[in-house]
Image (spheres, helix red, strand yellow):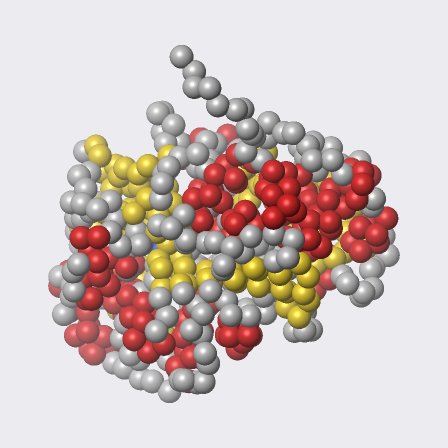
Length: 540
Ligand code: ADP
C-alpha cells in the first residue's frame, strides 16, 4: 500500500519561487573586481535569474543543454546557479585556475553551447576559445567593454522580458548541474547532479548537525562557486533565505577579514590554505577586529591540522568545523560536530575528534573495505571508504572508464583510506595512491603532515614516498618554513618521535620554498614526487 502524500517534485524552480515569495527583503552583497561593493536584494536577484532563463531560451538553449561558466563568487554567478537550471539547461561551472588543455578538454567533453565569462576571466577564455565549439560567449560585466564577437550579459538581461518566464514543472531527476573532478586522479570526470539531489543536499547542509544555516545567517562562501557548487552553500543559503556575502575574486586574508567584520558574517567555509593565511593575518593584528558575529568556519577539502583548530579557538575565539566531501558527493559527506559523549570529555580529547573528518550527515551511509572485507568501526582498522546516498554520483557523465569507482551493489569507492570509530567518525589516513607502504605496513602521510605543521617553525609540510631497497617505500617530508623561522632535521625528528612509532619517522627532510598546489588548493603530490624523482633512501 502506498502512502497518501502529494507528488511534489524537488526542483530548483521551487526554491527560486520560495525565495521570491518569502525573502525579497534579504540582501546579497558582492565584492566587485575593483573591490567596491555591489548590493541588491533577493527580489532583484529573482527577477534577473528569471530574465537569464528567458534570455537563454531566446538564444536557442533547450532542456538538457549545457551552459558553462567561468566566474568567481558573485551575484551574477548566483543568477546563473538558478537561471540556467530553471531554464531547463544544465549549469556547468569551470575552474578558471586549470590549465587551458584541461579547460578545453572539459568544455568539449561537457558539450557546452554557451559560456558565461566574468570580465576578469576573458583572458582565460581567450586562451582556449578557438579549441572548443561553444556557440556564444556572454561577458559578465556591469559596464566594461565586451570584446567583438561576444555578447553582453547586461544587454541580454535588458532585452529579456520577465513576463515570459513561467515556473516550469520538472521531473526532479532532471539534470541541474555538472562539475568535473579536478583530475588529481587522472582525467577530469563529470559529476552530474539532479534537481532532486541539489534540493536534498541544500536541506542537509542547513540542518543543525551540519552547518545549521538559517534566515538569520550571513554566509560568506570562500570556497569558489566553480568548486563543487561552493559546497552547496549558495543553494542552501537561498533555500533558507540567508544573507550572502560574495567575495568576488578577493580571497586575500585582508579582504576576507574586512568582509567578515563589515557585513557581520556568521558562517563561512573554505579550504585550509585560505584559513591558514587568515590565521596568520589575525595573529599579526591581534585584537584589532571584531569578529564576534562569526559563529563557525567550516574547513575541508584537505585535512585541517589540529594546531589550526586550537589556534583559532584559543587566540581568536573562532570555531572551526571540520568537514569532508568530494565532487562525486555534491560534495558534503561528513561533518565533525561532536556527539554528546564526546562533548563530555576533556577539551584535548574533543580536539582529537574535531581534527577527524566527522561522522556521516543524514542520508549518507559509509563503510570501509580492507583486504579481508569490511573493517570494524574500532578507530584503528584501515580500509577504503565507500559511500552511498541521494546526492552521491551513480556513475560519471559519459565516462565508461570511471566505472571501476562503483561497487556491484551501487556504492561509490572514494579512494580515501580511513579508520571509522565507535561514533562513526571517519579519520582520513590518506588517499589510496598517497599511502606509504613501508615493510608491509601503512604509513599515513596526512598524519605526519599534520604533526609537522603543528611545529611552530613550520608553515607547510607534505610527505611522499621515496623508494627503499629493503622497505619498498620510506617517507620524505618537504617542509616550508614560516618567515624568519628555522629548525633542524633533528629537531623535527624529535618533535615527531613524541607521537609516532620509529618506523613512521621520515628518512629525509627537504626544506623547500613552496609545495606545488592543485587548482583547488591541495598539495599536488604527483608534482612533488616528480620533483624528488630519483631520490632514494638508503637508511637502515
Ligand atoms: P579531487 O578529487 O579532484 O581532488 P575533490 O574536491 O572532489 O577533488 O576532492 C575530494 C578529496 O579531497 C577527498 O577524496 C579527500 O581525499 C580530500 N578531502 C576532502 N575533505 C577532506 C578533509 N576534511 N580532510 C582530508 N581530506 C579531505
